[in-house]
Length: 390
Image 1 (cartoon, one colour):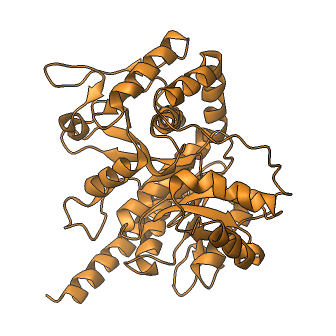
Image 2 (cartoon, one colour):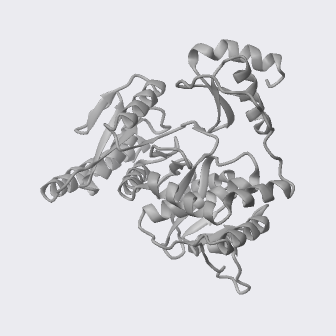
């Protein structure tokens, strides 16, 4: 049978299952549905694959209403027209801000520095659920402060998804021992964190690769680049790599002051992952993630959070450059300028502030970015090149 015929047959089966499940779900659906947006343009598998994921999610979950943002597909799901990815993202942000959407799932979204995504996987050895903190974005410029924040982010997401006392482990990567010492101090200061033990004979808080496969901790902490690789391996290890077939996607962007729930999927994510990501986003809405993260940081501050951050910076990490520059009036920044070194990112933003251009630091899928308003792009590029940032 030809490849095209196989894909067509799979698509037909998905559609039949989705229609059957949704008919049953509709008959048993009570209460207010969680409205989750899904942008469908930009996938390597075409918009139809994402639509199948949306249909499957709505069929399997009677508490979810999926709203598609895009065009060019036939579906019974609610659809808001958008001609390209940029317009779909603009509509998504607008609908989240005016609360016509409770959450959203999308690809290639640029979060500001301080926001990073927490992934969710089912581990292969024992079928355990595990949260990867984090998988995209940058929680902080410095490595150890970033992983400290990743820990709080992971705990908050796990709690929002129903784990009242999630266990925490640290993947054995660069900085793991520094992070371990910092988290022990945070616990001694009064932050309630439950450490787990490696399943290997020598135990300990620092996790081995075996612990990843077994899903030993509820929350596995690492830097976001490592987490991104892990997500791809977990989701596509049985498909050859070009089709992500299992899991919940790269998760919601989490930050102390970030007040939206935007889940990330890859351009290689297939319908099952899309469906899982929509379920994950709805779980975060129901678990009130945005308030949960604020609560976690309030408790961490009482346990000495600020002093702890300062101590790990002085222990060899680069601290932020002091500046008295007052930022210009804030405005929407929907354009991005890539190509600036991550350690120079904040300095680049301040240079733009000095000439009354509002900008924010951010992290795109390919690296650090300066977020800028479209009308300021040309002038900002000129200033950044003149200042040797580009």
